[in-house]
Image (cartoon, rainbow, N blue to C red):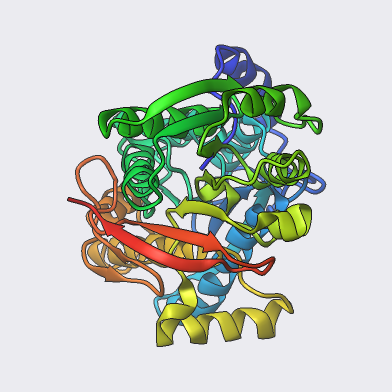
Amino acid sequence: MVLKKTLSILATTTLAVGILAGCSGGQKNDTANNGGNGGGGGGSNVIKIATQSPLSGGSATLGESIKLGAQLALEEQQANFEKLGFKLELVPYDDQGDPKKGVANAQLIGADKQVFGVVGHLNSGVAIPSSEIYEKYSIPMVSPANTATDVTDRGLKTVNRICARDDFQGPAGAKFAVETLGAKKIFIIQDKTAYGTGLAEAFKKGAEELGAQILGFEGITVGEKDFNGVLNQVLAKKPDLIYFGGLYTEGGLLIKQARDKGINVPIMGGDGLDSSTLVQIAGDAVKNTYMTSAAGLATATDAGKQFAEKYKQKFGKEIESYSAYGYDAMGVLLKGLENAIKANGNKLPTRQQVAEEVRKVQDYQGVVTKVSFDEKGDNKYAKIYIYKFDEAKYPAKLENEVSKQ
């Protein structure tokens, strides 16, 4: 997943936040337990793992779920690392779904020499510029949710993801829309972000190759609440399916307003819709909405059910789509860290050594996905899942799953 294209302001932002990197203590609401000085590695036995995801703002439901899943995995493995002579600590950062904030946080993470890895991000538009900073500092990143192709196509040695890519998700959705739902005339709406536009374009290409006619490809703005303009275009064009590339906040409003206008054709979107908040926003209007997701149904397996129970017991809330992916991403990162420690004679490894071991991870069995990284850092076992809302209830009903060809 998701927000805002990489902007040309990255260089300026990097320069500005570089000044902040030397005074990383006391970042209120950005991180907990950041440890004060930026480089206290030395002889310390403390190893920090950061998370970066939106903990505030419109994407906070999914962002928090990533952080909580990662936290649970780290806490479960603290005793194992204590036996190796190291104390694991989690340092969660709030990237607010904003590329500039993500880069600023990444500078702070890089400056803290006790940080040896990052689980994140939710939004591809935040992950892309932030990961340039991780690469500079040789900090391995394992993403639970970033689907934009540019996340791994840049060839960075430190960047990995356990979920599927948009060039897999988009065509999978298009195939289902055309061949299963019988859509021949499709109207596409996207939120003009790296995630939304990329996914919508991948869907459009796949649908056209299957013979569907694209009646419109219109953009909305993140934060927008009134979609009368674009929905009036939909009414005039009379499509038999609407596709939305974007997140659940705008998606929920778009679905509700479409139904209020009497537009009752199927609405489809990507994993950005995969949140309980979508149902809260759209209500009963969510019926006959389909979504593709890079996130599998965690409770489909015994291991997933046990995870969901532990998650609810600890945090007092139900899992979200990327809760288990935060958990598995942390598991993969810690596996690489453990391997690096052992390969280094049970001494503290370098960040580069950890990054190399993370990329080498093969056949790691998580609670929702098996993970083997290819040379780019993509997961060979990643799947796309197709869901349908038959009622105003989350999670949606699993309709199909598609493996990589």
